[in-house]
Image (cartoon, one colour):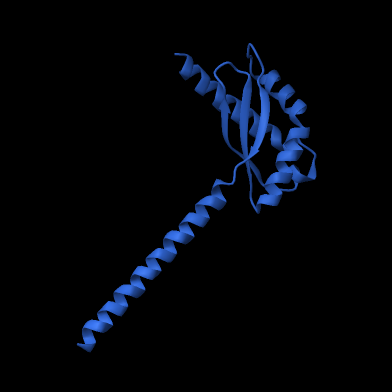
Length: 130
């Protein structure tokens, strides 16, 4: 039963952090498209890892993470006002570069498929020559 409550709490915290993002006045957050991709809360409610992604490159994501670390007090107040918890976890903001990783892996797979097609065509040409 505790896991169900923790997962519900995790989703609530994610929703509240996402709702607080437009109110942050730092240009590294307000000037970019920032989203909370994932939230993980430890079972003892000590820590809350918040994975943040920004549309753009890793440099923008790192800047947004630094801005959110500075705004952690503001975000904690917003969460406390909306969600009643026995203990407020310490927020840890981390960059989520999974989109770049996905694009890199997709590029590798696509290049493998192109190599296979080239090999098949070369094999077909060899058959025609015989």
